[in-house]
Image 1 (cartoon, helix red, strand yellow):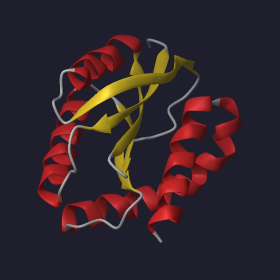
Image 2 (image 1 turned 90 degrees about the vertical axis):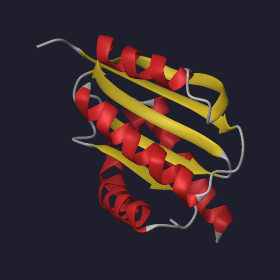
Image 3 (image 1 turned 60 degrees about the vertical axis):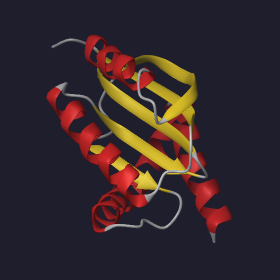
Length: 144
């Protein structure tokens, strides 16, 4: 089996994303990531994205290349990348730091909130994962 690779990036939305924009993005990402056998999490809030991707290096790079071409965001910045010993996510998740606005988003947020606490034990081994969780927690606190 090929070694696992992780990549964490942040970016800024080119415009405010409404519920239908986020639903399209969520469904599109789920399909493409599953086809590439890439798992991870995407957090959206305050017109910013932070995403953690994991899979083989080639698969992660394929997905990231596709992401860089997306018109929904700009100013992409890789926060961390490198080899990881094991997957931290068994599926691809999307979480929202602001209240989800659709049923699709509510279901995704519920799944994310169930799994996110289990990641706390892993943040010491990954700066990128720590940034993902911090972004989610900080933005959620600001939204309250």
